[in-house]
Length: 282
Image (cartoon, rainbow, N blue to C red):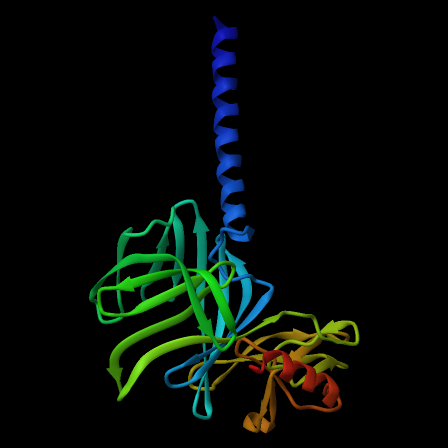
């Protein structure tokens, strides 16, 4: 009797394990295969909006989600935001923080779903084509999925790129709302010595003598974090004159300009031009 129970438990365990592995494989296949409509993490995507431009690139994984960063440029200002992607057999969810857009699988003409937009209005989505040919400044894409929304907007999704175009005849500030992919570039590592040069980086600091690491709050008040040790190195993203001059090393952390305690270096113009070329639209 005990042998029968043990066999049944073992069979159940094996069945659950195989189900888990099959589901995991399917999710990975959707994330990286030809049938995926999630952006390729190895690409840098450039968009033009009806009022500005944006650059999107993969940042990191968090809770099984692909986190992408977008730098949106409007006028002389840049605005940084993030959005997350999840994809499995049920569909693609794009979470922009205030609402989610879902491309529901399996794809089929006439399939419908809904989401709530920024204004709190329920929007119904309908797949109207699976083989649309769409022209953008980034090129012409075939077999594009066309989705019509109840507010008049059309969205177009291409394999391994995601949203490549969006059009809405509704006037906002006198202009039709629109989005278009204008350039796709392959992400490459630009090395500065034995370190990768990151987007927005203007220099680096090497600690010579023990020095304080500070964090600024929303009122720019300083809060002590810890003492940095000689030999530690940090990327620098900006510099200002507060507190006698401080270097921003990211995420609100700062190191004070004290030449006897730190060594500050800047990348060559050649490296900076490579970074500019990588993140500039064609």
